[in-house]
Image (cartoon, rainbow, N blue to C red; front, side):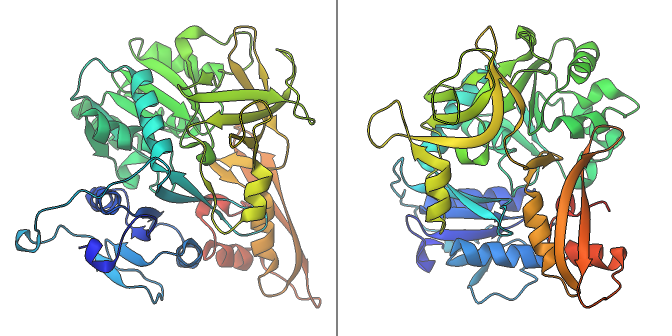
Length: 430
């Protein structure tokens, strides 16, 4: 059906569906037709979804429940077609450099960045992470608890589909209810879970905290992992292997891993580790020279997992995806903006950022993007947004505004307007 609508190589298709079977159907349909899927989480504000869909250059929209915003694109319902409508499926040839999906991340200019990831990068990641998980046999139970609009869940999503395992798409309602989540994990005998550390910390308030944890592999990503959290996991589920996983969207889900069993290697937090196969990591100074072990520098990543580009942003692409200073012509490195150091055993430790980007609930957030959106609201002449740490260590945002024309602005009104434009994790707490 998608082929009849003109979907071919590099055709971008909006995929408006939550975490459920319709999303799986849409991903497989678009990829088999040769297209590029653009995930659109219905939980996000309509204004943001409409902006992403327009920016993506999508030619078609697949929707599980119908888009609630105006779009001139043709729409198809995300439902299994009648068997009488299905003929023989001719496989569409794809190559490694062909686009597979387009995911948006926060942008410092107030405009989200669309990251285009190729089939080759995705295949390289899935092969590498399945080897790292080292599950003893097909048929394991893998759980996905993160939004479809980010790539955190690709570890278990594609890991299950490509590894012969069972995929469990856990609803948001259950994924944020400690006792319901624990009951599901226990009843379904989940073997592998990938989750953000702060999310896991909240779920461990369940009455039966040990049931929150998977039986075989726990993959942590999106934030730094503290030693106290690691020790609690070990105490609750001694037989579960813990893997710390790091990587920006621009490097296809994750590119570094560290087995918790290998210890802290002298660092203050669990290291982010060593590169997956066909990947490389460099710690460089401002002049792109390698720094000695133990000395802080900026992390640059390379190899088969590097994304193609930021779509429609050639200047930003050239700034972040640079020519590889130590390899053949055509090779590239991605400049992460993360400040790191290499530990004595070779693993890399995350130290912070070289800019003001922060992680909130595992999502990358540019405070300047929030400030840019805030400054466009009625009655606001200028805005500044700053991160701060709450008493329990969570990163939160605080906004400062300068009213225009001596207008008295109500904080509640401004926050309500922001919620119509931004995801909830980007809305300042005050």
